[in-house]
Image (cartoon, rainbow, N blue to C red):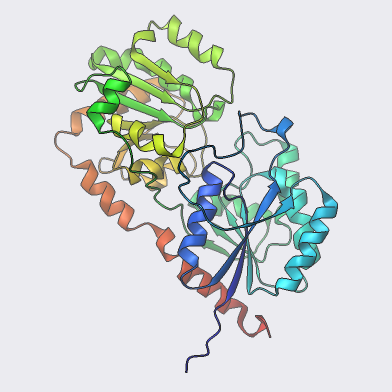
Length: 388
């Protein structure tokens, strides 16, 4: 009779009913680990105070929940008394590993206090999966909060080489390497031609997609400035901008008007429900990520999940996930001219290169699929200290 005990993993991070890439990542991490381990998600009862959240809602209002994973909504991100109660409950769990999802310095005090209160019991067993180290618009206070949040980490799982390098300045703990999963999302969407008609686009149009919430570091203004040069070479080019504006949209709208590009731009300024996502990707020929800074991007992995190539800038860890000339193109950052040349080159190459086949091969090499083995490696490094 096999009496081997399944190891117990606690994941600390956002999950449904919260929306966004972090909640999707935690759900995917839960799904890939649960076949090997007993996994429980410690979710947030309060993620962000409403006055700190720039969007319309923190919650997933989709008609279809893509990742409806079970979770315990226990953590209030701004209540120190709650952190003490959560730490007490974690001590009672006596888990083999506690895995924190880290992406934002705002959570530094919360994570720092909880891990300080449990670090003696969980010596060597506090893992931080780091999507970002410091936020993209990082200030001095962000680095301070990050130090507080990561101070008690036993080891890190970094999701890009860029993050590996950044972690070196926050301690000498072991760093393991993985990456974001390739997100496929909902397949319940209209066919390409139907979606284009719905959006007022023609089947022969050359459609660029900028997807996701709009913030300065994502460089949408650079792509808009590149559009006249692209249109000079690609007369049927159209830019599809889909996502909620966290910056004021007036600047972008005025820029589009001043460049005479209004007729070439379709703007969907709102939260996009899960069941709509695939349709927008399906309508596009290529996804453009003109970022000024990046570690990695769920938008890129979502593009791969829908078989779409990408034109990305050579910043941070973003270019690590693109094979130039095979799964997309990599261009210099902060340059509308470089973006224009990259987009034009993509349309020149796509008749000769099977981008979709190369993307399927790249997705098949996704390191996220090896996450259970990575967790086993971390457990093995703890050795006999685990649950003695």
